[in-house]
Image 1 (cartoon, rainbow, N blue to C red):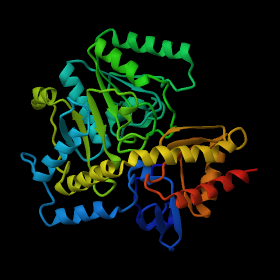
Image 2 (cartoon, rainbow, N blue to C red; image 1 turned 120 degrees about the horizontal axis):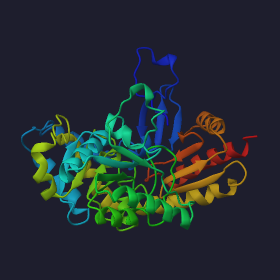
Image 3 (cartoon, rainbow, N blue to C red; image 1 turned 60 degrees about the vertical axis):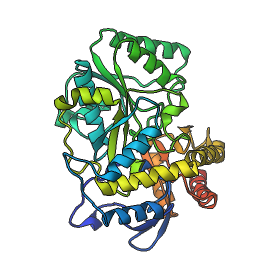
Image 4 (cartoon, one colour; image 1 turned 90 degrees about the horizontal axis):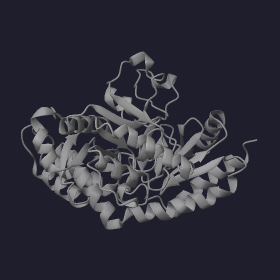
Length: 403
């Protein structure tokens, strides 16, 4: 996964994409070259870069108030909490403030331990939930984090049951999960809702993955936390990906597309009674979580998704992408997998994936390698069919001329 998290004094020495401006599904570099964006800044700008309504909402809020209180609420914070929880299943009626996905995941772990009195947390190998010590422990291998170890203890990692697993292997996975939970010492299972977006593999889970976990976690008094940081806000063809299986978790973590990139914000949504009962034990302090500006952006973002039914765009355009690229499976493409407009194009090796990214970039298409040999295709959901096809033509032409 590409992570350029450092800004240097002399950026020209490093091969970073140096943006000058962005609008809709287009990005321009410092030389004025135009690129079609197939990344949405990694599932952030789902409504397109610099959506005018969202930006206007931010501007309007700056004329009222830009910062909140640790010990109080602003009207726009209250309004957003009400609108967000109304869009979710009954019982998920309270929001914890956060600045982004990593902080929200860490908060959810604290909540789970305090609410259950248990210490163990179950995650899945080769998944990404954030860059702090507890969130890294959910899915990173011990080898990959050896230089910053030790991480937070009491984390258990299971193999992710992909859709190609087969019925017998899925039964074995569920048996392993049940054995892990049966000791009644696991506070929570943390998983994305049926597709891995954060690590970049875009692997889709075996059918019934989330529903089966919900049944087993309830059976053994374990909380189920669903990470919708990458899947939320219409990306997979539903407003929230839990809707694919009709599952109601104990907690949902959201960030990324929550404000369409206009401001940093994240949240844990759960049950108010549970949150209130442990509030004094979990140290939820965030100076910049849910600033009024961020909430104004998030409020307008949610309104647009619901008004435009953006998830339907994701479903139809995602199917169009699959149909266009299907012809390459068996030749230059090993496999296609995904949901909605979260699509993986699996190539034969990492070197081939890098070649495709570089060649497409030279032709004006911005795509990224998600993980090793997998291109993670995630355009803005609002991209026009004309621009989508122009980008796909560049990608297909690149795939045709690999050899």
